[in-house]
Every structure is written in structure tokens, then in C-alpha cells.
Image: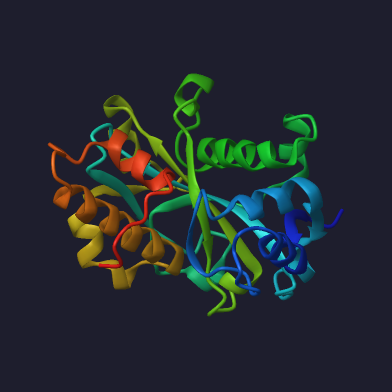
Length: 249
């Protein structure tokens, strides 16, 4: 049977966006905050559907939805980084560094959540995490999976047919070492600071670059804000999820 992937027709995403407070006709580009992305969620719930993957990979009129999970430590000051190698399916990203663990939403993900389209994306994120990094990841661990926004980059052939759903997940200290010592086909990588990923941003795939830029902007804002004692993970994520405007630089 031909492989099926979940997504939304671009025209429906743009229509929902036009019906919202966002006046832009074309689909928003770059990192799209949770607040600005409400139109995307409405389109997913209302018009999300499965499409044959073979044709979807070359069809920019259909946006395949990809959960993209960033792994961080409990302090929120380090991120899990890995390299896309030849064992991974998306050949167009081989050799690039990545912050995101994820993959396509499959029919079994929708079945697992009794047909709830929006929830199927989180179910796919959990499945990919177990398949790629931590096979013993339980429901309690996944309770901290936080959706922070969306990623869209129509400037290249990979981005033009995909739409990222960005999440952050805290990995407990006792599990962090496991990620650095895994055997193929599981992903292996290393933990790096935000300063490190920012300095090496050009080596990352585009979606990771978008997140690095946004993480950096939020961190700089928090560091400048009067009365903010520290850049903790809690206030970092609350700012990512809030409607508070951040300065451009």
C-alpha cells in the first residue's frame, strides 16, 4: 500500500489565515508563534487530510505536517544537537546539523488518538521520539511536551512541501547521557549551549536556524527586562507562548 502522510492544502491554510486577524494573503514565513498560528490549527482541525507521500514530496500546494521536537535540559540552557546522516530518509538534509526530532504524521497516529487531527501531531511526535531517541519514554515524560509554534520556509524545495509544528521537551538528567551513546539506527548527538548553536547556526538546517534565531531573541529580551533575575526555562517558554511582542534585535 502506498505510504500516506498527513497535511493540509496550502489554499486552506491561507484561507484560514485571511479570515483571522492576519492580513497577509500568502502563508506566513519563518517562525510562527502559537498565537499567530491559530489559523493553522483551525485548518488542521477542519481540512487536515492524508495524501500519498510520493506525490506530496514534489507538490507545494500540499503542506505535509512534521512535528519537530527540540530537546532541552531542565535548566533550559542546553540543547540536543545531532547531524543528519545517510541513514535518515530525507536525503536533501544529509550533512546538516539539527535541533529537531520528528517525522511525518501517519495513519496509525490518527488511530491512536481516535481520529482527533490536532492530537495526531503530538502522537506522531511521541512515536518519533521513541523510535529515534528514547524507546522507554513514558506518558509521564511526555507530559512536558510543549508546542511553541510553527515553522514555514518556502525558499527551498524541502521547506516548500512541509510545515513544521515546533515543540520543546525537557529531558531529565538521568536520560541525557543515553542520547550521546546510542547505536544506529537511533539518533546520537551531543548537548550544546544556546551560545554554541548560535555561533554555528549556518551549519544547521533551515528550521533549526529559525528556532535558534527566535530562542536568541527571547533570551536577549529576558536578559534586558528589568526585574528578571534569571533566564529560566519556565519564563523562557512563557514568553515564547505569550502574545508579548519582542524587539526585532
